[in-house]
Image (cartoon, rainbow, N blue to C red; front, side, top):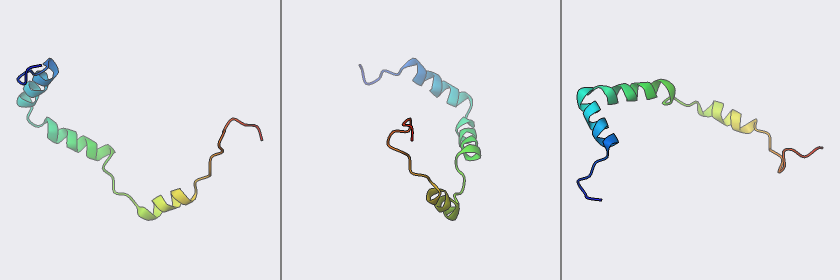
Length: 62
């Protein structure tokens, strides 16, 4: 492959970003709504302490 080759997808994304310069800002805002949440260390520790050990073979009859 030549070093100057760009796939159709890459070309499309470059053109789209030029036509819509705010797209990356909106992506970061959307990520912030769903994923970038502050974590409560005490609550997380409580979840870890409440975990139940899983059996080696979960389908075995007791």
